[in-house]
Image (cartoon, rainbow, N blue to C red; front, side, top):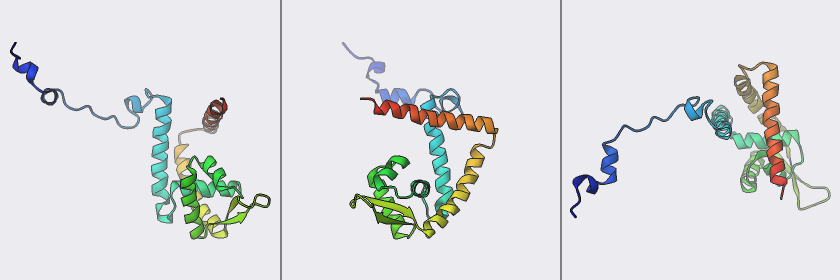
Length: 176
């Protein structure tokens, strides 16, 4: 049986003759908007905030993960590197690099744990406190921009919702 030209034509040639490529929707459109999955929308929002934060802090020489580490050490002085990793959602290896760089720059310092000598505790230095203050001013401006269209009740509701998601899903991880 002899094949007709249509049967022998390659798939790539058929696709080339088909309709134009699909347009990727902008944030806020289609599945990147209100039709999207909540998990995807949270990730999309996180990516946008992180990129904006990176650009906002760049001239201070601080990355978004470094800002997170400085923030947690200000809030909870004396954390170990492992604790910082858990609180900042970073790997212990990444936190190790960040801590070495912040220590080299004089922003944090290590003190041995009073009971467990092998555990290193980290605290901000005066230089680190000053750097964090400069970063915080910029991040607060970004957060105001994020909440600009929200009244106090809506913002509080969203904060409760986001914190509740983290707490609820953390409980799922703790189950065997």
